Amino acid sequence: MHDLSLRQLRAVSAVFRTRKIVLAAKELGLTQPAVSLQLREAENLIGAPLFDRTVEGMRPTAAGLAVVDAARAIEERLRVLADEVEAIVGGRKGALRLGVVSTAKYFAPAIMAAFMREHPGIEMSLWVGNRAETIAALHTHGVDIALMGRPPREVQVRAALFGEHPLVIIAAPDHPLAQTRDITKDRVAKEHFLVREPGSGTRISLDIFLADIPGRLDNPGVEMGSNETIKQAVMAGLGVALISAHTIAQEVETRRLVILDVVGMPIRRQWFSVSRLDRSMTPAMRAFEDFLKAEGAKFLPALLTRD
Image (cartoon, rainbow, N blue to C red; front, side, top):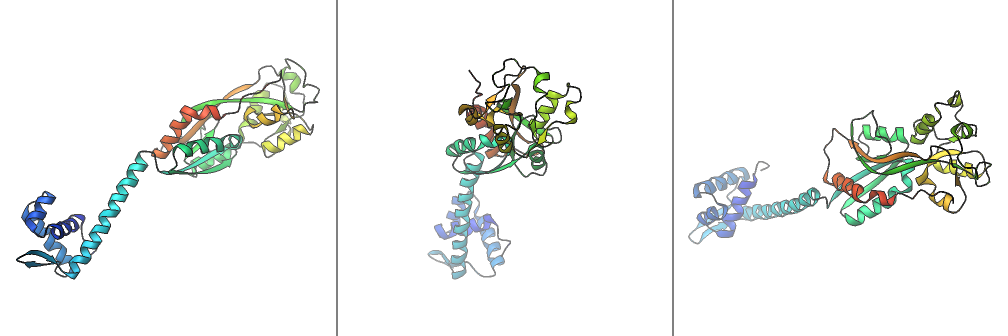
């Protein structure tokens, strides 16, 4: 019975509706012998006659009615499947696992909310980690798309730019350099830095920024595990920090932090959406990348500087 084909079930249904094999053949666009063959094969697989042949036409047996009910249920499920596939292909339905580096968690929820308003049939989940963890999640297929800075070299990816990512050096408002203009790199390098762990994007950028200061990277600063901890430590006067401008908009606006006027700052980086090159883009992924390209930049906090 498991070997029943869709063609056989459709032949049974057509015979039931029309009561005559010749009419069923016309409905299905087949020859009469072809319908008779499919009906006979179905009966052989079922192990019972499906119709009684009468002068009034084909009358379904109890087994025939059961097969017709099953055929109707299958046809209905196929119609639903067709609608579901059409919605998936059209980007109206699906699932998307979004991974973001920790710096992007300040704006990623707003992007998700706006995208899901436009695509209510797409379910999204959010995963947050540092740069190294995000690359690992891409490598293991733990996320479909990642929002991050410089695209990784460890994994072959497709990357699409969606916005600017400025990095700045921050201090407490009462820091001695808070009112100083045109601070040189050599001068700011003498400050006590609060830094993220190795592997994070801002730590890599800081290392690059200070690399030409002899001996400076031998003791980069006090390591802290999150941007929030670093911001609190800077506000408490424990030092300065290189940080994404997108993580400090509220604190700068309320004057709890200031951006130091360092020559060569801000460091201009970019935000990318990144996905593995060796996997097919799902319609949901494509819809999200199209949304980021068109709308993503407007969700990035503005770079606030002092007067």
